Image 1 (tube, rainbow, N blue to C red):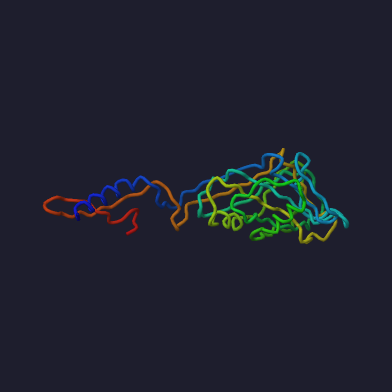
Image 2 (cartoon, rainbow, N blue to C red; image 1 turned 180 degrees about the horizontal axis):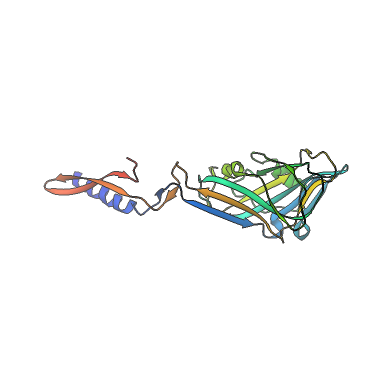
Length: 245
């Protein structure tokens, strides 16, 4: 019975070296663009406004004394980052449609705290409910004047993306919804607004990630065996896999 258990153990170890185990410091970049009319929406809280589809304009900041608190929701699909990966850096990238001259545009960037968010409904109230479920707010402040058709990158939003890939329900290939907004009305000067083109023009996200020290999976295991002899027959038993006892 003891010899049978040892043989089974050796077989398991030989098979196990071909299954995912830990690997550190492998660097990968994920990029995506907003695609499809139900993945891009615009919102203004005062006076209330709502945009969806081909006319969608990405915006954040304050336009006039009666039109302010602009924001945007953008959904990126097929985010192929393993659960628990370390997010080294991340940002959204926006192509300017037009922008106010004031350099006091203040905004936040965050992610919807849902593991695999669906497309947006054509409803301002539904969007407001989804926005209320945001994660960490990352400040993107003092955005200077933009030039039409130039592309601008946000501040680093890795903390917001890290929350998503660390979530219990996260799986590689899920979608992520990113909010860029000034719903708190922190852009207090008129003409402090930044407009980006809608989903039909470049609007993207860049995420640089790596395998963390907590053991994100890969396929480069190395098994180290010790040997024992029973009744004149030598068997190998696992000592460690990839340095883990």
